[in-house]
Image 1 (cartoon, rainbow, N blue to C red):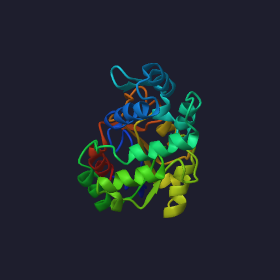
Image 2: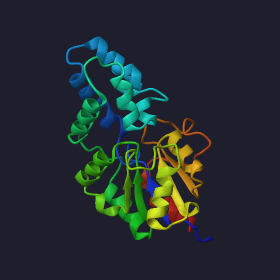
Image 3: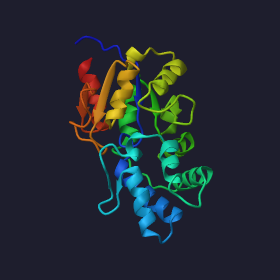
Image 4: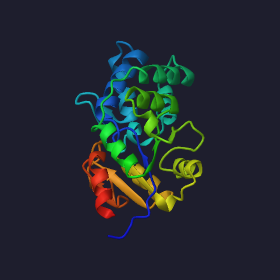
Length: 235
């Protein structure tokens, strides 16, 4: 088979490397209780603002938690909170992120290790804060596998803008056409298209199904666990 031109893989974090629902449902539950202790009405308002269904602990299509940056979510919450500044909300956000349980979507050491052995440069681009992302990767003992990590506060903008991918390309000296971008949402696929990456891979480990990923996904896989074999078969 013809040799593929791809040299690097840039991953979304939540819903791609780690279970979105297991991580962020718990985060929202804890955040609301801290921001509005005992106030069920205000907690429900906070949930509605970010697109979280408290009863079944799921996220609606187009949810801010899924699509927006951490700063945008915190700003939306601040606007309906009577006694908290944006700085208060962001400080609490980072505090709670540091105490979330790990819920990998697969054996990350095996999947990412296989990709490294295939010669790929690896990176992470997330709309989460950089500090929270880095801490989560460290707790999972996979930080050393990545050559690049950025968050929505790293100076590249947020997805679906192309800035994070451009930053990855600049840092690794690899052209976007040689980059594979992997994510679990339509805004991830839009991000890849906006940066003109070589291949957009959608995975079904987040809230979106294959249809919701849209036409931007060049291929949809069950999870990143199958990505090494998929790429090997293309060679």
